Image (cartoon, rainbow, N blue to C red):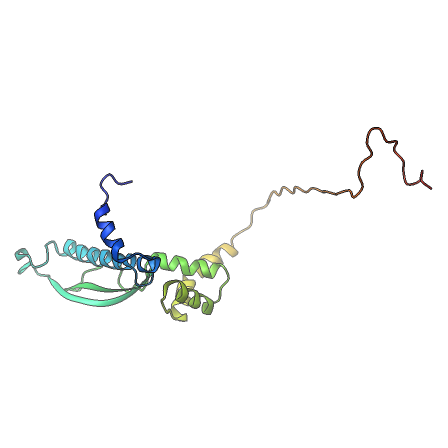
Length: 197
């Protein structure tokens, strides 16, 4: 646990005054999603600052050879749903974000969930329905197919791997049988079926 928590009790109390239901906190438009979006956006700005070597609007950036060049909108699929981000650009087009790589349409956690559904045997249509229900996000069958295709090569390698010469197997079995008759007591003489005839 952190010695100095980021969110003090006062901050949490203020948040919980207006966000006091599960949907308001964890829902598709909840505060957790807003927080992830804000942190991701801030991290992208920090990456651009590191790339250029100076703060936004700093005088050291004048005539530096490269500068900020606005943003481009991008929708990224995450476990909390779709995040609408503004990806910073530089004039030379050299900026390569690490957190949200170029051409990426989803963050790793989202991909893992889709792969888990695929491995559970769901069809692409069923995965679409599950993602819609869980995250409130509509994904195309093409996107689902692209995600699952990433796994198919690994599955083929596993299925076609050379088998070991010996696979030891331990088989443990038991047999339990209930008796409908009661056992004779020590004082009763034992009589068999044939004795009664």
